[in-house]
Amino acid sequence: MTVRIDKKIVSYQVRDAKKEEAAKAEKSAGNKAEIIRMHEKLERPEGMECLEGATYKIRTPLDDHALYVTINDIILNAGTEHEQRRPFEIFINSKNMDHFQWIVALTRVMSAVFRKGGDVTFLSEELQAVFDPKGGYFKPGGRFVPSIVADIGAVVEHHLKRIGLLEPDEMSEQQQLILEQKRAEFEAREQQDSAEKKTLSDAQTGEVAAAGSKGEASYPASATVCFKCNTKAMILLDGCKTCLACGYSKCG
Ligand SMILES: [Zn+2]
Image (tube, rainbow, N blue to C red):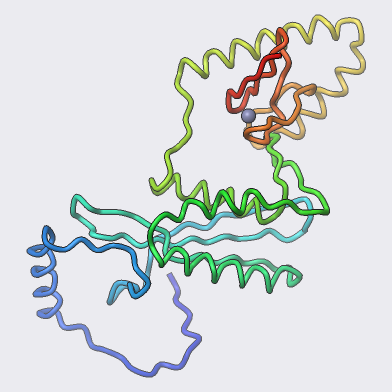
């Protein structure tokens, strides 16, 4: 990994193996006594210029240039029962300079919130509720995103699930089975209907296969956007609206 130094070097320190070992021993001895929690004064771990993190790429149909979101984490109380991985800082890069000032503002505020400690999961919810008055867009797989900010919020949510700060919303096997059955039933009925108007539906299925590429599940062409997960996966079956993506269901 290359680290670019873009500030003047004003001081330096020579690593002292003995001191480091003593500090390590002290730390492991004091593990039970002191649990480190997230707070504003918490600095990057000494001697560790490198934090673990992940970079996510966001492509939008609004822009030729992708956004790159990097979230770096800090591991508190490593090796103890209180070990916790928390986001520490966020950076967003884009070649599109139109976004420059709000992106800098957003990432600075978010990094500050991360370092304050406490619950940071609200950030992803807040961001995902932001609507662009010019209109949102669909992601591959059929999920509707109301703005670029909301897209960034979804990335933050994904990251927080990855590091265990948010519960992953996995469906039970039974739930998945039910959805698969409903889907099969719906598709069978649609096929019956389309026997009469074949040419039209052929054109539609072709379109959906293209939109749902990249190995993600595509949903029936007639599906509508789900109120809960914003995916174009809601079907009407026996008078009940059911989402094939998240399982949300409403009858009547
Ligand atoms: Zn849904």
